[in-house]
Length: 375
Image 1 (tube, rainbow, N blue to C red):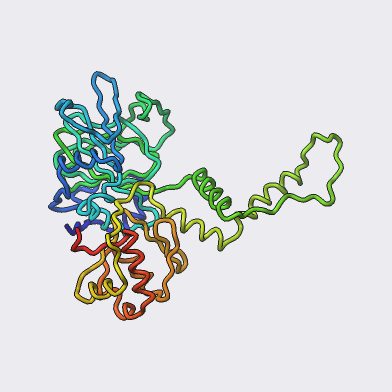
Image 2 (tube, rainbow, N blue to C red):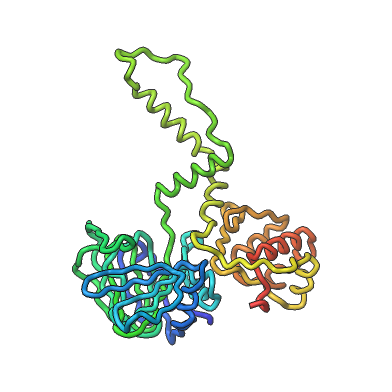
């Protein structure tokens, strides 16, 4: 399915992106659900898939985590099934991510899909990332409040909610409607009838995550080995005193570890190209030989990128799932990063280069790209 998003992106970014929420009526005209509730339930039964079931009765909230064996015990009201990273596991659903590539790939996270019965929802809460919530089948009511300081509480150890809030948006959403919510705006949604919702989320790494990730890189590459020195150690009134210039020297020593542009770029490319959820990796057996890749592409076959695979470009370098990939032909790297489907039109004469074919074979044999006919 080729989803066409009716949105003026420059206007949207200027007026709403990370500024205020907005409901986009009929953002997708004639919206067609890429999967059924039964298919979503089937995904929630798989070990590798991250899923949860949220229910509430008489003010008591319950959260269960997949994989689930059955849903027969559930009633007809007040529960939701939420499945993360469906774009990794269900190719028709992954097509919903494409219209949002007007925003940078490195900011994109995953596609969460929820199925809710009447009254189903997760309660009023805050998110620390941007999200576009697309209404599929059914109707759902959404309330969004203003961005003000709010206390959070846990009605269940696995559920973080906020107190009731005044709404600045209070609408019923129908198929094809899209609700954009920036970080920090409280919101709650509940179904008025059996409904599917699709949430396209965007990554917003915190300083804590970045420092932790960079520290791992420093350790793995044995960086930061320089030690503190004080050849002219100053005198002090009391031996217990740490002088201001000494604490500044320690701080500068730590800054110097980060202040290595090439290492920093290499780390960030590796760090941000890693996925937060499992990939549906299925390396081909037997592995492809380079000449088989050549023949298939020449015959008109196309290579599709694995759903959820992060392929990012940083100053000409291309990173795939935490690794930089090398290729003698820069135009091939550009094609790999830009296109989700590759064929003879995108690769052209580069296919006559044995090193390019070897690189493509390695990517296919890793399960990162696959021939579309294998779907």
